[in-house]
Length: 533
Image 1: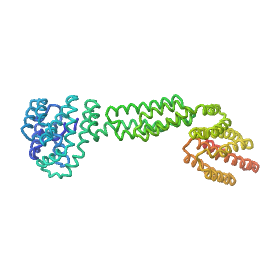
Image 2: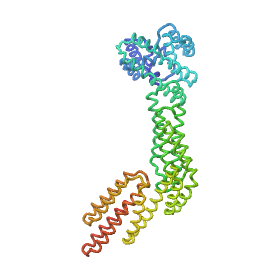
Image 3: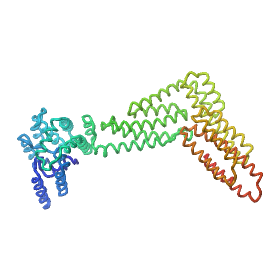
Image 4: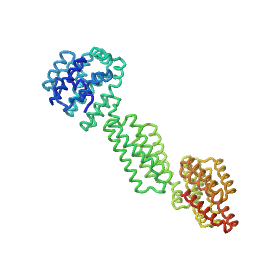
């Protein structure tokens, strides 16, 4: 229930806002005496809407609020201001619980923007608010919101409110406190309509409020928006963590997960639409994040799996969540690229087929020819170069894996050419990767130097240096093909050098050192297997 109306301090005490401090204290003692004999008193301003709101605890809290300048202003504003015969007449029918009659008394006098009319408007807005807790009434909702809008946007009202408040104020409240309340008033009213929304399980209270006011209250933030944002963020984080192309295919399980997470985002977005908060600035930011998460999956599927139809389908879904023009432009640009790629399929299709069949040499040759034939079509050349990265990397990886298999079987002379070829494939095409060649050269030189000085005694230090180099690769390159290609290049050189060291050491081995040397080789194998896998 409402802290503003049901638990308003003046409501608890059965008083209007003109009550003096001595009347407040006297009424509090009177109520407590009745309550101690299990008798709950009723007063003129009770409308019979709330049950069990007048207790010893609520009376105590009401007194505390009415003895604090900052809190008293809020209690004063959100209760009836009884100032003249019109107000007295309206209160008179309260006793008979004839609230519609009270409305008919105040309404004609609330027309216009005279000072008296503005205070009648406030009384009417409070009455409508109380009645809305009793029944879900669209007419009361719209009229109350219109009245609150007229009141809080009226300079004349706030000037008169300040003067009227000070006439009854015995706490010597500073004007800065009244001004601070004025600045927060709309957010307090927002919380009132949030409470009404929760009371009736009807989002229209929040959406109708949002059409007239551009603020949100703390209750709206904490009990309505934050849970929705949390649900969206949870789904977005799961999307962001997905690495669809890591295993080389977009399978049904991954598709089902994406569908589930997008469904959760859509469900939460629908709630925001119902609340009238879908175009809110904070909502737009989280919508952009959702669109961005889907876009990352789209690019992964498009760039690494060449599944344009699925990528385009997801991209169009992402565009439904876009919140800002910047993100919309980015996704539209992606979509334009996809459209161009579809037109280029006649040219790119044969390359994709060769890659699918693992005919990497032929694919590289066809890519180079296509780039030469269509060198003036920048987008096509960029697309082809992306495919060339894939072809070169997979070609080099295939050679490397064969070489490593021979190495692990102790066939060092046979493994060396395959490992050298794997490294050479990458190095000869290094210009297509987004790397600094001078840095790569320095890493390769370091490997050669480390291999030259490797002995069983310093193997751990050399191995640690290699581990550090691989870590640098992982940190330096986010793009899949760059990372894989440079790993092949670095480890290709390393295995070749390591094979030479092992062969030389075998030639020198004596029976007394054989056991320790075998243990060292096993350690190296285990370390490199873990590194590459």
